[in-house]
Image 1 (cartoon, rainbow, N blue to C red):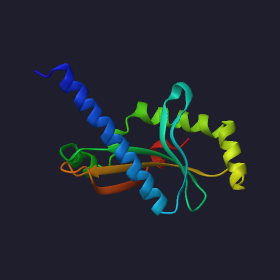
Image 2: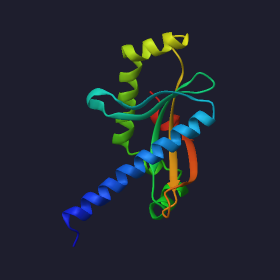
Image 3: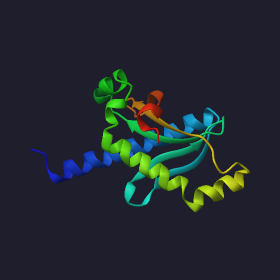
Length: 151
């Protein structure tokens, strides 16, 4: 039977793994020419958006990052990670995206960048597969979720 300390330790490891995965996703996006607009954007009661980025084509991308341990990754990667996107999760992402698009912060950020006020949007899922031995990243996969998240 697990002790409370064991459960707390495992939960802390999951949080550290998720943070490392999000950091790796940000590096991947920057390497691909994206501009990171927000990280861990809290959209009121609707939830949090992992990453909001501007693509090289000037598309606002709402990006969900899923980091899976190796033993959990087989199903996530075989099914392109979309199994982790439940209807409830998709609904929260859409509401959070709308909240952001209607926020003064969004308008200010676009003005700072000298961009039009109405840009196209896209929903993406980035899957991170870490190495269990040293937690380095073995694989990054990016999938467009527009067909299941479109407004």
